[in-house]
Length: 132
Image (tube, rainbow, N blue to C red; front, side):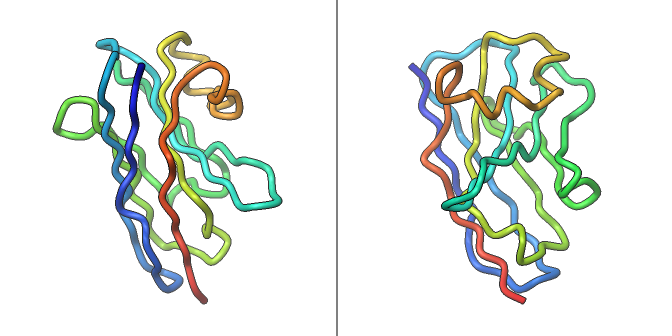
């Protein structure tokens, strides 16, 4: 079992920045896929970013490219999502997720974030609210 805990959400004005963090505990592997997705009640989930802990390219949704950056933390089994130039449409619950069963190209394709409930682990989410 793996437990994930997000932090860093909050309320900001448009143009502001937030840094989300995620800490993993429990069973894990040396190399795995990590990522973030967001969801607004009544709307479809959106895969935001994904990265393999083994390095390489990252996946970003078109809506966040150039504004968001996913990274591994200095502490083992932590990850971050730096969000700059936030817009009201970024308002959502943000979830971190991991998957231990997919390879690099599937990881950075990002689509696994839509299926993480059945083939991975996710946290409880942290709310991000951006006002205009």
